[in-house]
Length: 377
Image (tube, rainbow, N blue to C red; front, side, top):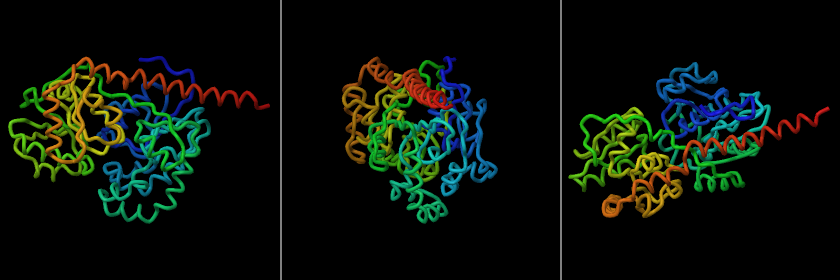
């Protein structure tokens, strides 16, 4: 275990711990960097998120008494702003891991916000709300104006505001009018861990790792593989769009569902390439694949511009068109990147780099707190 930071009394706040995604892996990285920090959140569903959280000091809000909300956090969206507004965190430094909610807590000490993106339902409502339950849409549409005011006020209370990518920095600039420092999140999957083969799969398949939601554009990949009948696509992940996608899938697509980390390492390492077509603010699956020596074919959008070097660690396709996906895959097959160059690129997103910078930021804020306390009579 790494040594603890010099600042005592660090607290972590996260939106909700109900699923297995990149943000949840970041919280685990923060918990490793600050091992004594309690984790405050609105909802905690241990069976729905990473098992490691069960061993940590997770402190959910009163909303967690509702099993329905624990199992479907989207139903709680209209309630999350007042829930966090009601929290007061008594710590010298509070790290808010936020995509629009956690940065609204009240903090007795300094506040460091690690923002994935401004709240999508507030600033990208046409895309985001279309995917939500009708109760959520009804509640959000009637509260957007006052909650934008709340959200901007919450963002402005931060002592330091950092973010995950160039795209997120631009979204923050548009929403709040200030620049945020980029601190790349770490890949959460240790590339040196054990690998467990997945039954029924031979190496050389193509891989998609994604929650199954409409904006992830997995249906585009299914359409592309209809035109590649001799190749196989493996889709890892679950989500509300799964039933529809299974009906669309050609015979050469395999849905693996939820897999263990050991199986995921094997899948990354044995894939010909990772494919990603979603609208991501970063997209760490490309880095996890690179850390295991596998290139990526990705949509030229958002965070992939930070995580993929065109022609060196992967290939871009410019539009959501099946033939463009297939051309990118053909370019990768004709000129595959060297595995070591992929691993070198992934090292820029290592846990150690992330930990070092976050600890430095916390130490700076802790020193500010100590200086103010020292000036008091």
